[in-house]
Amino acid sequence: MNPILNRIIALTMQKVLFFGVILAGSYYFFFTYDTYNILNAKQQALGRDIDKEKEIQKDTDSTLKKELEVKDSVAALSLQFEKIAKSLPSVLTQSDIMAFIDIFSKEAVVKVTSKSPQASSKLEVIELLPVSVTLKGTYFEIGRFIQRVSIFEPITRVSDCRIIRDATSNSNTYIFDGKILGYRSLDSKQEEVKK
Picture 1 (cartoon, rainbow, N blue to C red):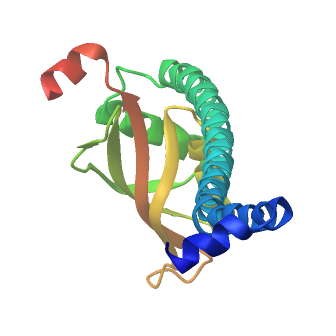
Picture 2 (cartoon, rainbow, N blue to C red):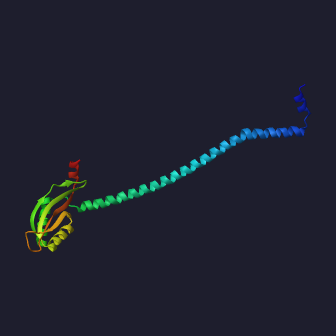
Picture 3 (cartoon, rainbow, N blue to C red):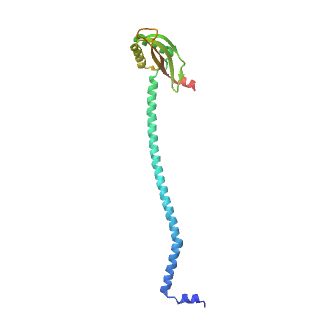
C-alpha cells in the first residue's frame, strides 16, 4: 500500500485527536475568525449609525422647540401689530397735518414762513405723509414746537431738519427747516386696490 496511508493507520488515538484539534483550530482561525471580525465591524458601524440618529433626533427635537417659540413670537408680534395698526389713524391727510402745524406754531409762538406737502409714499401697511416746513423763532420756541409735534400721535417724526441762525436779523432768531412726517394705516380697501 501507500506509505502515507500506512503511517496514518499506525497512529494512536491520542495523535489522531491532536492532529484533529490542530486542523479544527486552523479552520477556525483561517475561516471563521475572519467572519467574526467582519460581523464585529458591522456591529460597530451600526452602533455609530444609532448614535448619529440619536443626535439627529436631538437636533430635530430642539428645532421643533424653536419652531414653537417662533410661532409664539409671531403670534405675539401679530397682536402687537394689530394694536399699533388700530392706533394709527386711517383718515389723516396732509392738509390735516398742515392744520396741526398751524396750531402747534401758534402754541409755540413761532412764525411759519413756508409749508408744503411732499409726495406721500406707501409702505407695506402704512402710508407716509411728509410736509416740508420752514419756521422762524427763538431756539426755545423752535424746541417747544418740535416737542409738541413729536408727542402728537398722528405725527410721529420730525426728520431732515436743520436749525440755523437767521442772518437777516440781529436778534437771537433761528430758522428751522425740516420735514414733519405723519403716518396713516392703509385700510383693507386701500390694500386691495394696492394689490
